[in-house]
Structures are given as structure tokens and as C-alpha cells.
Image 1 (cartoon, rainbow, N blue to C red):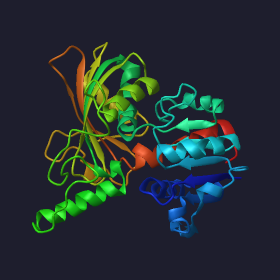
Image 2: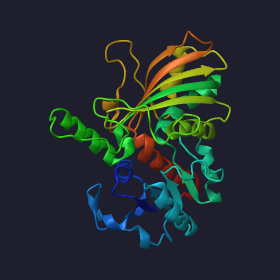
Image 3: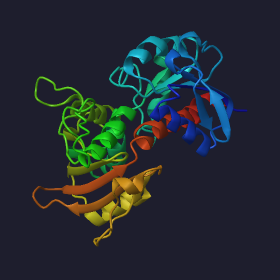
Length: 340
């Protein structure tokens, strides 16, 4: 017996990836509905060897459906997620709308699976920001061993984090570099992204941080431990898919780099590729299409007591969004609904 699953926003990058992952992981599905806005109504999407036509989100009745994976923006989520939840369908939301709601659990299944039982307060579960998701997978097993005091993280985030329009802008500007008559001024990003890096993701806040940086701080505290101090600098780079992070960690207790490497090798969701030689590390190009969060460049930080540095890479459309949502659905089914 399987689940009745709805994918909301099935025509977008993340929605399509959700469908791919549901099929790849053989999620137990009895019935599947794919929804989109009216402007995309009737658009066909693939699910394994099947082709499905999208239905109208505005008129869809969520009654009798088990779970809805939302891959639409906060405005649409604000309108439709409460309707689904009220109808008894558990919402797994990929937007930022509910992440900081005390009555909505924010879950990365490898990190805080026990939080899934908090879904019942609103019938909603939140998926974290893409840059947070991969980082906390790496932090949690190390925190359990030596207690993390402070994290300094610099991100190198791909343009797909800004959706299809972000990827299109990088492609168009890259082509225009070689054709000077074809000028492509920035529309999605604040400056040219081709052959450039932009230290600005989301809006600026009063203290000078960006909203993306604030999200990493707030979400890490909610998912892992509110006592951890986090400071982030988030940068958009001309990479199509795959977020990278340089993470500096200060612990309460000493943690040797070799022990840290062993801990991470045994941790769920992590693949350690860490050889001190040319190419002995993972880059964004190599992580695309993979489920794992890759860790490389593990080494002591001799400038502080109890410090480590590491390099963290993951497919942001997968672990950063679609995969994590499907893993939450698997966790919910396994621990709570128990139908599959």
C-alpha cells in the first residue's frame, strides 16, 4: 500500500527534480498528482517512463491526499499550503515561509529526524535553505562528538539557486562575452554573473548581512543547536548546479582531523573524498546528480584552539531542495503515517 502524493510546482526546476527523485528512490506511491499555476496548466512532466499532465493548483481538492510536496514561492505557499493542511494533507514546504515558525519543524532527516513528530501542530513541515541543508549534514556528527562553539562559512552558490532564470542569465551572458554586439545586462542578479562572483544573495538587512546569510544562521540554530554561533558570507558564482562551502569550525573540545574524517565517513548522507593530491577533492561539477553531501580538505586550523577547516559540496537542486523534501516524506511515512 502506498501514499497519495501531490507535487505542487511540478513544472519548475525543483518540482521536476522531486519527481525524478521520487521515482529513483522507488517511493511507495498509490496515486500521484502534479499541480501548476494556470499559466502552466496542461504542461507535461515526466515521472519515470510516464508522462503526466499538470492540474490546476487553484481548483485542486487536497482532501484524501497524504502528502503535498510544495516547490513554489512563498506567496503561493501562503495561499495554498494552509488549504492542503486543513484538508488533512501534510505539507512539506520548500519555500522560506514556515522555516522560522516555532510550530513548524525544520528538518534535515540525517540531522534531526525526531523533529518530524512536531508536524501535527500545523500539518506542515519546512525544508531548509539549500546552503544550510548541506552544511548541517556535516556539522551534526562533529557537534555530537566535540560540541561546536562557532562556525565561519563562506559559500560559493550556483545560479540554479535562483531558479531557471538564473541559469538562463549565466548562459546568455557567457555567450555574449564572445559576441560583443549581443549585450546582456543583468536582470536576475545585481551584477554580471558570467566570469564574475557576486557577494550578494537575497536582500540586504539593516546590519549589513544579506537575508541568505541570516537564513544560514537562524536555520543552523533551529536544526542543530541554538548555542552555536554562526557567521556567513554568501556568494553567487558562475556555476550552473552545485553549491560549495568553505567551513571553519571551532569546537569546545579538541577534535583531531583524522578522527573527524572517520566520523564523517560513517555519518549518513556524507561521502568523504579527501586526498592531499591534485584532484583529491570534489568540485560542484562532480556532485551534480548525486544524493551525497561531499566533504574534502579536512584539516586542523592552527590559528585557534580546537579548530577544523573543511570543504563541503552538494547538488543544491537535490540535497538542497528536492532530495531533502523526499527524505522528509520518507521519514514521515516511516515514523508517523506508516502506510508504505
